[in-house]
Picture 1 (cartoon, rainbow, N blue to C red):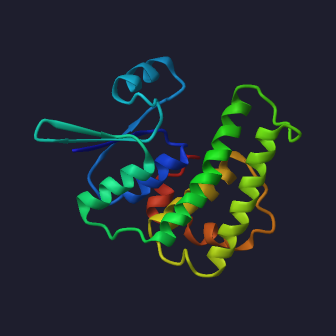
Picture 2: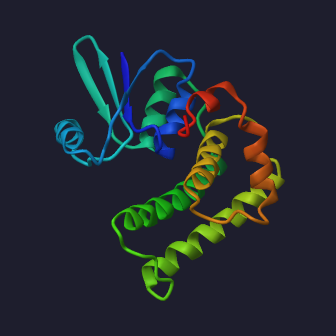
Picture 3: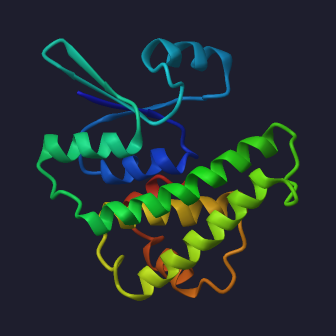
Length: 195
């Protein structure tokens, strides 16, 4: 039995929820900032990060800690096609923007205002801008025309940016069109963090 631990708002969790939409599994909604859930999570996952996958088979428990590693595990388990090097690079771009935005989001939730004169914030903003421009070009070149795992991850990134109002996507017409073209998929609407 597969159990996916995560929150309904995390873009890293959502990509796996979408990918597992037609696979039997249990989703465990974790409130990562609540003391009780954090205490439970540290017993199972010393990184205290989500998502985490638990695979229980014949009384053996495997725990996988990172969305990228979880995908690789699932790809092997269910014989999904392996990602090619271009798709791996696409995931690196998507994860880079996600990571920067998550860090800035957590700082904002902690009451630390973004100061673009500080190196940390400047680096994050520059990285997000550069990555989104590159992703916009990749969409324009047709790299995300199939609903494969990198496309799912890209959708989750763009939707999370919109959901949290994290970045101005004005001018990134290909990314906005990609988002609009995929927002009515059943697995997308079923995992919408707004509901």
